Amino acid sequence: MKKLDDAFNISETEVVENEKVGITPEQKPDRIVKDEITRDYEYTRGNLYSIIEKGQEAIDGILELAQESEMPRAYEVAGQLIKSVSDATDKLMDLQKKLKDVNEETQSKGPNTVNNALFVGSTAELSKLLKTGLTEEDK
Image (cartoon, rainbow, N blue to C red; front, side):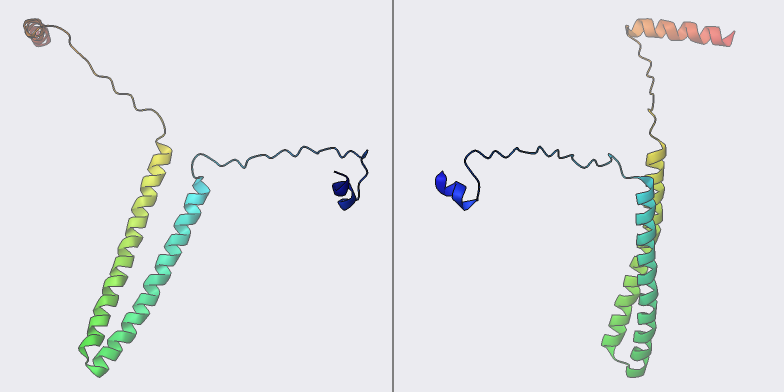
């Protein structure tokens, strides 16, 4: 014990009080905030537009190269680029649909009430009830 006191330059009677440090956990929201959804949508939409535009430029360049060289491989690459760009445009349309679905989800939070009518009885009682119900409606 004496060696530790000498190592830390403290006397035996010196008492150091502990400070209690409170750690507050970071609170996260239960659902994604609408602003975050909008920001993510705009970011993804911008990226898709950029991909489509660069793909169009690449298609123009590879088609020009394919026509000049008349090489089958150049035409194959052009076909793959065209497919990639068309997939990106499909993803852009899917993004619109997903945003619409998310907006509908956040708007329709209320409970949906379903009322089911249930008849408890025999088939004879049900038949009698239906006959009297039909005759009363006909009057």
